[in-house]
Image (cartoon, rainbow, N blue to C red; front, side, top):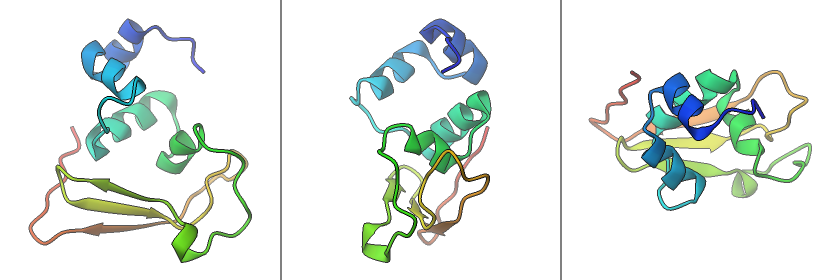
Length: 106
């Protein structure tokens, strides 16, 4: 979207090229911290970033249809309540942490 090379994105986010490449090839799942850095670099909300890989969503998502993303490293569970769509300016999520979990945003 920005036309950045892998090197430029690595410099912009502080994420190594190797890690970005593994995420791009789906060899590893991104953490909440990594996704936060990508969102900041692209100026996108989390659901907007994730919607880039999904088809146009329905207007209403029932709970069983809502995407749940889990960061196993931090114990953070994120449920997308509102459908991800480029036309929305905001998003609704349900976020839960396991007891004792900590998320470090660098």
